[in-house]
Amino acid sequence: MERNFQTAEPFRIKVVEPIKKTTRAYRTQALKDAQYNAFRLKAEDVYVDCLTDSGTSAMSTEQWSAMMLGDESYAGCKSFYKLEASAQEVFGMPYVQPTHQGRGADFIMAQYYAKPGKYAVGNMHFDTFHGNAEILGAIPVDCVIDAGLDAASPAEDFKGNIDLNKVQKIIDEHGEDAISVIIITVTCNNNGGQPVSMANIKAVSEFAKAHNIPVVIDSARLAENAWFIKTREPGYENKDIKEITREMFSYCETATMSSKKDGLVNIGGLIVTRNHDFYLYSNVQAIVHEGFITYGGQSGRDMEALAVGLREATTDEYLEYRINQVKYLGDRLKEKGIPCVEPSGGHGIYVDARRFFPHIPQCEFPAQRLVVALYQEAGIRAVEMGACAFGGKDPVTGEPIWPALELMRISVSRRVYTNNHLDCIVDAMEYIYQHRDEYKGMKLIYEGPITALRHFTAGFELL
Image (cartoon, rainbow, N blue to C red; front, side, top):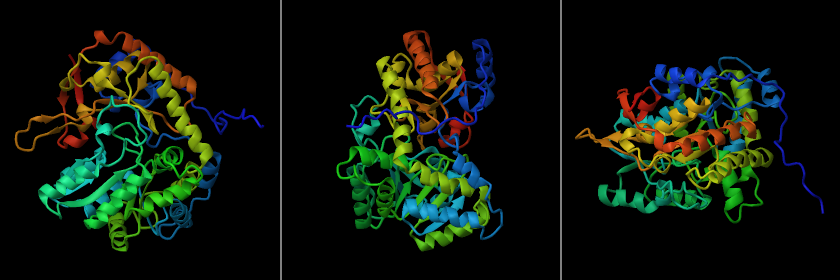
């Protein structure tokens, strides 16, 4: 019987970037200067950066070499056709429109599918779509299963699933044509990077067809979702990852993608569709807002790297390493008693700030307070996904609406940090948790005009 001793990362490090160390006093001042908003900190002042997994991947030698082949022709460049073929291989849909990044794809999709006064239903919409919906006058509604709304719920395999009973209730109360689109986000970012099962994707598709509602998949983390299907859903354990992704997208009309996640690149986005009318619409919108049809705001070099990255991200070797590194961080935090969403998600660990700081009410932003504490103590940057990022206001009274979840996301960049870096996060979190009673809440002192996007520029004070 052959023993497997080859369990390390499926790559070796070829280029390194020095990391700057800072003092606690330095970081305290940096936080004050940034009005306690992690987005306003200088990246060079961050020791381990877990703000996002978007655009922070390390590219492979194959990607870097492909960039040298970039064709920068304005129209019909060779690099586009390589990207088109790669996307068709992964998505199984015929029409591909590049965009400068995911929010470009999101904007074009929202213009077409989100209708004023109509509901846009999803498991959990992310902030950029919320912002687009708010501007358009559409009504975004989250219909994730109840377990996905409870950060303390026991682990189960697919907490990103859509609850179709909730969707049916909207139709029952507001009419057959009340919903303009159903958007499935894979994996579900807002509640812990939790996956959506193939059975649920298929059921949503069948429901949508019965009610003549188009289905869109937000596919930024499509490979991670496919890996969870392969490892958790019976009948898929022996299937190739691309076979799983193609089945996933067979149940939708259109997909959008921020390629900065599972595309393993630093910039770029995609629209992939089987709806020819929407494809033609996206071409026109791309010319106006992005660039010509065959580059869509990306350089030829970017598209070359993305064509390779899509293929690399949909391999068992890469995904096994990727998911297990995130799980390693989650397991170590759990050992220290840190309350996290379980099971560990695909792209990061989500700490339940309500249970971490039970003495800080949600109106005093406990998740943001934890973000501030983690940077102040250790120079580690995470991000709030709670009262600021996903809170809202009653359109009539203006009173605040608090989200169901109050989380701090620790994103893990792809192929960037070693487990030693993750151990630094664990040690800092353990220290803060042991001293959690010493921390007080925060006050929001500035927010922009679009509530759904305020967390990017918000300002805070410590109480």
